[in-house]
Image (cartoon, rainbow, N blue to C red; front, side, top):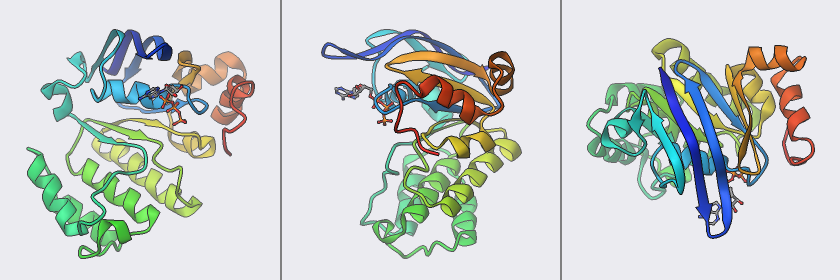
Length: 242
Ligand code: ATP
């Protein structure tokens, strides 16, 4: 099964194509990394996949042919947008309550236990948590929905190396233990090296490379995902971080 399938997918803002002629099949059971320079179209592709925005051309389906944004699709997807959006004035406990109330399926014991394990106090306002704690709270709320596909837009950009590592460890555990498929965008190539089994490389609104990381490395004679991505992005992506 493919968790995301796009065919001739495009999104235009005025005269600018944020994403063009995107044809892709991302298989289930992987952590798939979406890599590309600023403005490459990563957020646009993720927003199209979760149904937050409508295509200007082509089509995208998720979780084995469900129309992006349809109820059947949304039922199986959890999405954490860039900058980990939370209601900053609500306490952690209230965020759990709100998320549980808005979702048909929500594993409250899991959410409570995980936040407890992370030492995140239930009474603290979400806005008063550190950046890493906010990211972990958003991830916990997403995972407590028990999704089949977890979509993360730049989840670790603002985190220190330890927080990044812990965040990614949670994502990997969800993938390995619970079989959650993951699609995440990131500029942090070193972190992706550890987790990604599938790579989609975007540049200037177009897919330049997509496939299993091991196949791509063999085909392009590169030793690491970082080396491969940098090779393709060097011209257009001086801002890609290490
Ligand atoms: P970054 O790494 O900086 O987050 P990105 O790869 O996620 O970048 P997108 O946010 O998808 O890139 O943007 C792709 C292109 O589409 C950019 O040129 C951007 O200016 C444009 N764009 C995105 N959203 C809009 C919008 N709502 N209105 C107009 N243009 C937009």
